[in-house]
Image (cartoon, rainbow, N blue to C red):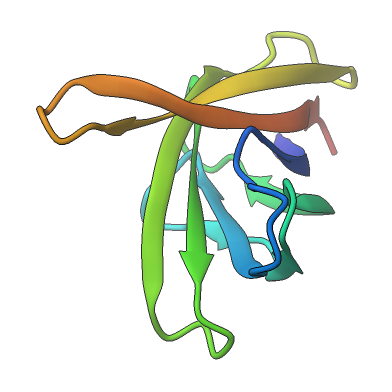
Length: 125
């Protein structure tokens, strides 16, 4: 069984100012085999519209993902937030999820920093 993740975009991230930032998403169900999107440059909320193929070799029940701001060479990354969501139970059906991106504030409290929008689908074959 394979998991197809369509990373649509992130909301609540961009400030709309003149400065543009580079963003990428890293996603995994097995932390030894993460996949990442291409880098998107924008001053607004990033739109990825990219499908990541995650082979399901081991039993897993959650999709984990992280959003980063990176330099243009992708050699330095700033962690923005982490999100996780339960995998769909039905095969051959797409499920839309808007999941919270969370990080720690300066006091160590978990805060919502934005949202990651994904479509998830489990496919047999």
